[in-house]
Image 1 (cartoon, helix red, strand yellow):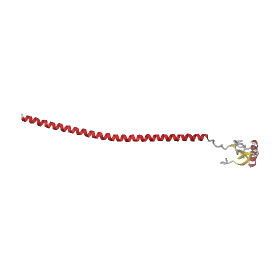
Image 2 (cartoon, rainbow, N blue to C red; image 1 turned 45 degrees about the vertical axis):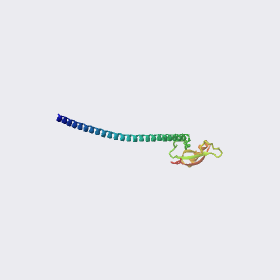
Image 3 (cartoon, rainbow, N blue to C red; image 1 turned 180 degrees about the vertical axis):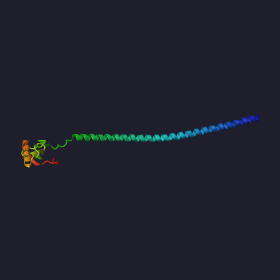
Image 4 (cartoon, helix red, strand yellow; image 1 turned 90 degrees about the vertical axis):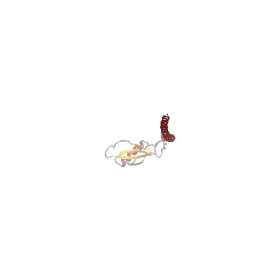
Length: 167
């Protein structure tokens, strides 16, 4: 019996060695897997921390941009209000008694009329009024300008042929 016992003990020792080796292989595999997962977890945590820092920085940038945009909107509103309150300059007016000349020989003349010397100048009145006149020559234009000026109680300041850029 001693040989069977020794044979049984040898088989048991071989099986135990094989089982311990398998256990050691599984243990090492598990440890490697834990180390790999731990490294992956640390890398993922680092990436997450960087993403959170980026998100916080972007949140701060967005808040600063919103404050800047609100400041700019307020400035724009103030400028618009200021522009609305400003009175635009009075447009240059040219009185046109007739739209077209009465004959083909007529030329366009621009007469400038001003208040007469004996009349006070009203603040709302324009100091110079322009009148477009159709006439065949300088004398006819001057006569028509004097007629229009007397109707409006003004005086003829100047008379010149009407050309582009004269107004």
